[in-house]
Image 1 (cartoon, rainbow, N blue to C red):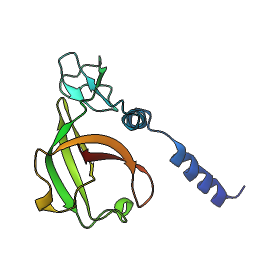
Image 2: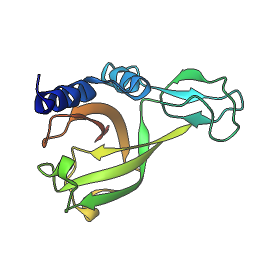
Image 3: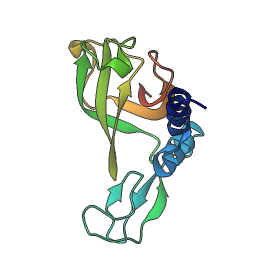
Image 4: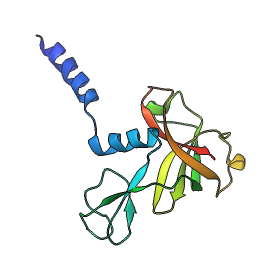
Length: 142
């Protein structure tokens, strides 16, 4: 085997590696079983986490994610990074889902500042980017 083919095999293996906590969370979202992690003190966070960022607790439990959240903030992206080149223009939004906030691509709305009201009720799901087909967290109007 040549050095060149060793490098390309290594790259393929690196692409196949799962980020267990995050990819498991994406799998759960895609199956309609979204969850968040909660500390005994009631702080919510998203996977992957091993320690509560607020209290330092390592005793985190999986709790069901609320079905509906509300858009708190958003931005319309016209000049995207390379991984989203074919998706532009698109909207990146932060939605409040009670114990946690989720950042995702807001789909199902026009990418126009005037078309997106703050407080818009959204559901979270997993879809694919146009550019490379990789999974992405998506928020859609309820």
